[in-house]
Length: 94
Image (cartoon, rainbow, N blue to C red; front, top):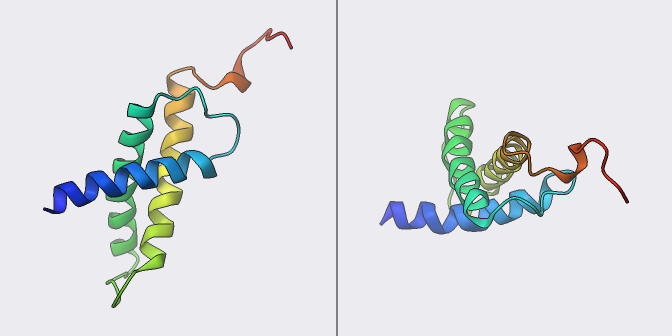
């Protein structure tokens, strides 16, 4: 059941990460955004745990904020690596 939860959270966190990421990231495909969200959830959980986060009763907002930040970083990296960042094209005409 945790895997399904991570996938669902990854979809939501990936879209939030895409929204929070600076620049024009609309060219990143949806499947890559979802993978970045899943990666953000997993990496965010490890970072949160490494800095002493042990969870709290109810919704742990700090953990989710860390996951969104990680997903945003992954979206920026994915957009840069795949060359789909429209702001980095040389000779682009308006």
